[in-house]
Image (cartoon, rainbow, N blue to C red; front, side, top):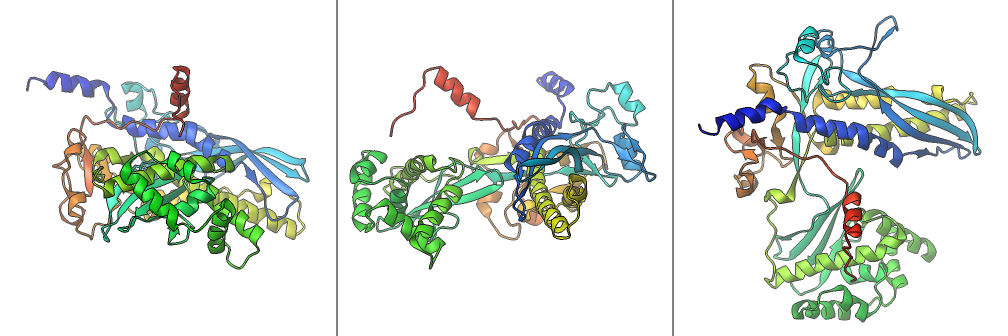
Length: 489
């Protein structure tokens, strides 16, 4: 092979599990503080008490012996041989206020977080081959996995449909759907704009009525006159036909009427003021949350929905082709860091729920209230350890955490490169199992198991790399500095 020298040079300097390590490092550095920021203020049922959370920190793996003595240096080999978990303590600053007066402030230990081997928090990070041998490690071991109760566990990369991306498809009734999975934090909401065969446009989103007309919702979002509707849609003959048809069929005249139509479904039997307020809350919270969840974002949501409707109309008139859900540009791979983010967000929510319960119980029993008595560290640790041990993840996903084979040198490497689809293995799903043209250079078509998992469990190609998540704000800022202007709708 003429290119063997290049391939050899590539693997000489590249860590096989580097993308998993980078993903975990990003989770610890950026996502952990974001999750705490989402839940920075806890208000229990006892109204005068409030707790503020800030400055979460994960330390290098430590161990507390049976006699209670802590030891700061705890290496992976010791975790393997003693059937312990290789995890670091989590701590954050908790500030307790009572009637806006500070009662207690302290750095509280809230649980343990499993640490990925060779990540920035691991004791093996940056060590030379000789130092690794002295610590009982194989210098050729790539890392990128966890040690839970002495067992080595690799997290299987999950293949999911891309969030915040509009996909056009035809449903069983031969109607055109424009769908987007809108994601914000832990919330994922599917928003669907459907064009019926008679040209009418309907919309469904979480907590919405089943047959809600799109134009009713657009009026509730702030579009009032026919001129405003025409300006929101492109100036094409086919689109204008559908627009006028929907406009004539919409009996709702004002924004208040449109909100009341939605309010009668989400708050039936309530007074009109409450119905209107509840309808606005539902629109802000559950409709396209990735755009925003404030009152000022409603008009932007309206323009986004008109864009989805435009795509559905164009597809109905054969001006636009359907989107291929199996095309890899419409997929995203969730690496270890993203999976740990889902798991920690769920565990942290449970910790907050438990914290509220402990505060309410302490106050009800008339005991002295302080931070050390209401924090129960097991609330976070138990859920994380259970998921990592069993592989049962958030969102009913199973087999996410896998016992890592050490049968030969190649077995752990394939475990670190596995990609699992969430689709049901008992269904035929021929197209989802097929090799797609966009798999070329990204996924190895040969290494897939026989039987029900065939085509659903895949392996990344040896030289394929997955990038970690990046923020949009710095790119938008750069574009504004370069003089790029937003098109006025």
